[in-house]
Image 1 (cartoon, rainbow, N blue to C red):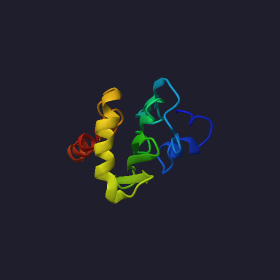
Image 2 (spheres, rainbow, N blue to C red; image 1 turned 45 degrees about the horizontal axis):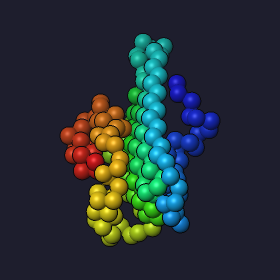
Image 3 (cartoon, rainbow, N blue to C red; image 1 turned 90 degrees about the vertical axis):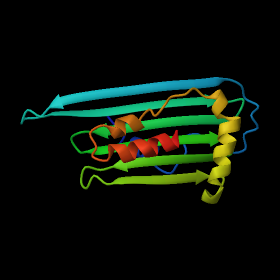
Length: 167
């Protein structure tokens, strides 16, 4: 089974309300670009002969000079039925994070939106700003993570629609 990167709260931090990097007060005076992709896969066979898998994927891109950042994280555990995916965008002192999760208990999809530096009512304005000021400088990663959420689900069509709407 995958280690939870040092402690049990690390995955919760990725899929919670906090933003991973804070650009508040950034003047865009730093220079450079950072990109990081990580994936991990683990499988085992239990005493009944059933194979279980645990997967994690993450991609982060940041352009320091423009004060923009985009991160996607996904986690799935076939033993517990837990699936989580997060998509985070930051533009200077504003940010938005969409977290989708599904648990094995009831299989219900839960989508949560978190906003930093603006109200939900200004979401359309943030998206317009992102598309014009940030998206042209970010690589197209498709729906990394959300695809992992789509596998082995009864509502894959609904999830795919949500995923495509977020990209």
